[in-house]
Image (cartoon, rainbow, N blue to C red; front, side, top):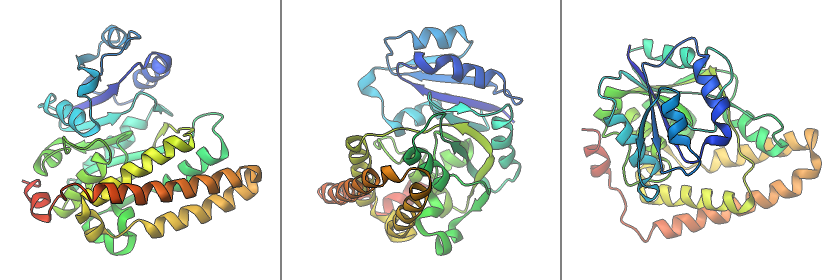
Length: 300
């Protein structure tokens, strides 16, 4: 099984030593490590070459989350499995890649993603988001899972996620004009085409963010725009409202025990997320919707 590790980078020098150490200590070695660098100014590309990685440099304004990842997939024609890793996600132990790749021993699996642990010294708000979204029990999901899990059935993160290359290409790959949620779109198309996906709780990376309220607002506006533009996602997999309510209830319970002083901040963030999401839906409604026919054609 040929495995390519793909890492989009932009000024990754600060975290580079930890990232490379985490890759080099893996019990399963990738056959190729492809770094797509968006014209870093801190020597990231040179560091990647020095580590023996394949480097492709692109103009910073040419980057998009979907298009750049798709270009990397095209650049790895001999790979059976594409593992995507962001520059700020550090493998937690020596078997992270091995556990993730093992999911593809099941020929029905088209994609798999690992568990994200909060980074050291993460705030309680930051830590809870990881504990809620990335729990300790592995799970298989499929088209049928939408009847019980709803929108959660297509939850996926290519912060540390892998795709069977043939499966990904068979559904059109990553949407190249999408700058957010490209992994969700790909997984939704995989499920519609009959592929299964796996959440592998044993495949661990450390990755979390201390988002500002403004950053949270921008993020959730992007989510709203995606859901409006790709309305078939909500129509076929259900709205994410129920999961959002469960998250808020879980967060309040967690903070009441671990950091009650952060509850006002959490509630303000919740309000900002809601306003941002609704704003994104309104903004997205002004753009052409991706029709079901178009989504079906993308499956090839």
